[in-house]
Image (tube, rainbow, N blue to C red; front, top):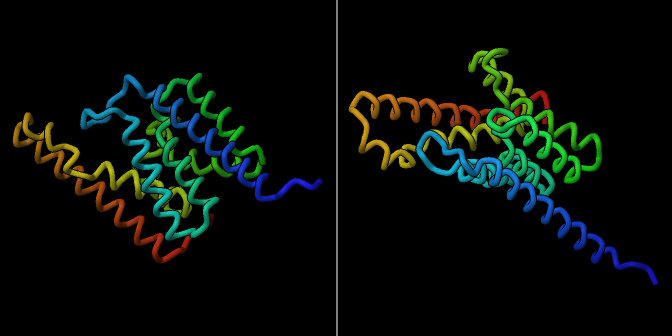
Amino acid sequence: MDEDPRQTQDSESIDRGLLIEELENAIGHYFADITDSCGYPYIQHCLYVGHRAAELSGRYYGDEGHREMAFVIGLCHDVYENLRANEQQNVDNMLRRLYPDNAAYRQVKRWLDLLTHDPDALTYAEYFERITHSRMASLVKAADAHHNGTLSRWKFRLQTMTDKQACQIRKACGEYKGRSRKLIELLDNDRFEEA
């Protein structure tokens, strides 16, 4: 008796879902003792960026495969800047299992490399410019910049700051929002060298 292709597809979806859940849990564990600049658990930022990137990918790619990739890349976007080498290697291993096709894995790693800023190698302006040549990196960075620029996340910290500090935070949030808008504009115009 032949296997029903729908059952095989459902099984693959469940397996992928479990691998993504495992990846979420691992990243949550690795970031467990780290808070973002607003004082919130860092994993909240990673999850926000993943979900927002997935949402944006629906608009700019329109298929479930890219939506999943956008979520994964958003979830992992700060792994290579903020985690220890052994934790990065563990994430790499999970990504290899999630993307067993070598070409897909290499593409995911390429996008993550674009999103990883090494200040010793590139200024922020150079790093940002590099991102603008890739649709996927741009939409993930748009989600990241949007979240970083959300002033309401600072609500409780602003109350304890001096006027000068609060002014600096408002300015930084405005700059992040501006970057997010610029990337959304690029996405709307769809002029990228790579997907």
